[in-house]
Length: 141
Image (tube, rainbow, N blue to C red):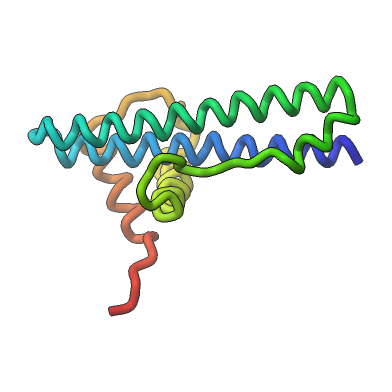
């Protein structure tokens, strides 16, 4: 049972890491769109840097909890009390989280096997955004 709890929690950590990468991709797109508007870009940079920092802090704490549970199965109860709050600090966190998930899924389809640390050329980020835009649900008018 502990092995399943650890595996499930590990999956939640991975989902959060993916979400954070999606947020970074979203900022990358914004950086291209606002490249000539430095004041707006700096505002977005600060906001997204904060979201990613808070998310990374949460992932680090989650990994520490998981390691404690691996060493002492009684600590697995901590999983129940651990809270992942996606996109904390964004005015519309659910909307950003959904877009981030779409971006990560699209990234994996458009650039299979590509290292996440590899920089994008402008044409690559635009290709990613176009492919992701086709997947974003649009409200009925």
